[in-house]
Length: 191
View 1 (cartoon, rainbow, N blue to C red):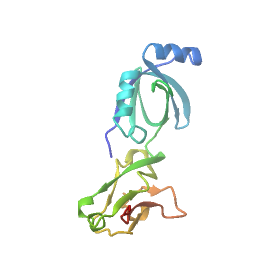
View 2 (view 1 turned 90 degrees about the vertical axis):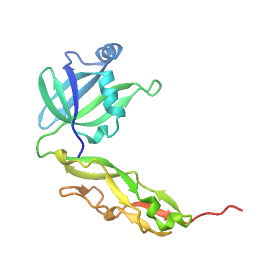
View 3 (view 1 turned 90 degrees about the horizontal axis):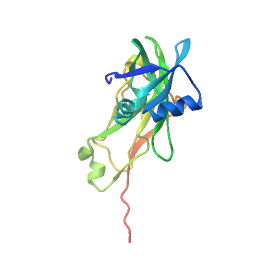
């Protein structure tokens, strides 16, 4: 489980398109905190602090503690929008989480021990089908990543999601089938 991100925000008095544009001109990003059976709160975050948190990786599956004018809010970033031309963050949605809140998140998958994979040594190619795995878990127990060990895999071997050891309380969102994570493809020879 990764460490919580800490952000500082200020309460927004005004909402709407004009107010949001004014915030962006002042290097602030409009955002909203909702959920946990409480009223939504509109806030503004400093652009630099927010962009550093987003580009550090794992932003949407890491719990954040937001200080809004002295009041702490424990949240999970659900979505953020960016300007399609300037790549500027324009808005963020945060889901307020409680102690027992169950969340749906995408967790990155790391493929390890390629050097111990006989199929790759014989010329096979690692064909990664999924880079993330969708799971349901409690908000305070979100795994940082999952690992798929390639040790001993031969050409034409396939690894499914059921081969990944999930921690207690973490379940796959897909239950009607066993999604393919990766395979070792046979080498192709061009003539």
